[in-house]
Amino acid sequence: MMALISRKQTSALALAGFLLAGSAWGQAWRPDKPVEIVTASAAGGSNDRVARMIQKIMQDGKLVPVSISVINKPGGNQTLSRAYLLAHPGDPHYFDIGNPTLISNHILGITQQHFSDFAAIALLINEYTVFTVRAESPLRNAKDLIARLKADPESMSFGVSNLGGTNHLTLSMAVKAGGVDPKRLKVVVFKTNAESTTAVLGGHIQMVAASMPSVIGQIKAGTVRAIAVGDPQRMSGVMAGVPTLREQGLDVSLSNWRAIIGPKGMTPVQVAYWEDVLGRVVASEEWKKELDAQNWDGRFLRSREFTQYMEGEYAATKVILNELGLVKQ
Image (cartoon, rainbow, N blue to C red; front, side):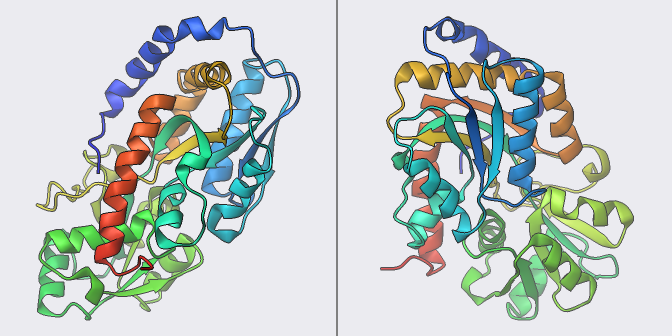
């Protein structure tokens, strides 16, 4: 996938992007009715947390002249929330928290919704996959994992929250990079990352490929051990001692990104307005603190760059999913 910038560069780039586009802030258009941020996760889910953080920063900082509400529409592997956007074409008062399912769902044939059916506003966050095992597991690192799978690819069961998702793809690409056929892996799909972590603690599966916020509590408690992370660079804090896949000779790094998308048909002036509002959001101290707390990586891409990013992600994801035999012919 595409190379990512360092955390240290994030704030400077976000501010620079905001200053470069500052002229759009003075445009005549601005919202004139309540704004809705739709999220496909239930209250308390990761997408919901992102939506409510944006809502709070916008309202506390008086960044917009209207009220903002968060609407939860879970279900359909995130297609229901996007159907809600499609029902409001051209209306710049409705937004959704976009993530990689915006790309993979179309490739997998889950939905006819294509990322080009929406207005790309801005990419905000990157979240990476962590490989965790029980604290008592003999697997200490990715090298041990690959060695065991080369001896017997079916000797382990892996937990993921959905087939074709970022965590599953990160796992598949990692073992492929190590010379193992990912189609031979025993992959168990759970409703949530939390359920898969419970299963590994109970010894029902041997490893979980999950998002950082889903496992960080167990890592801190010492009940599971992280053996690798899909971040392109070494994390800090409690994860400082965990090497990346790339450090362990597996050139893999995927992001479970979060972004803001709107309904197709928004005008360039309306898109520019919301780009700049979000530029102010990501430049706030509250946003930076939340990124650190959640071990999220900030990467602010404005509409044009975000659209190009998704074009590249679509092409690369289609190749991977085809290799796994998950694409309907």
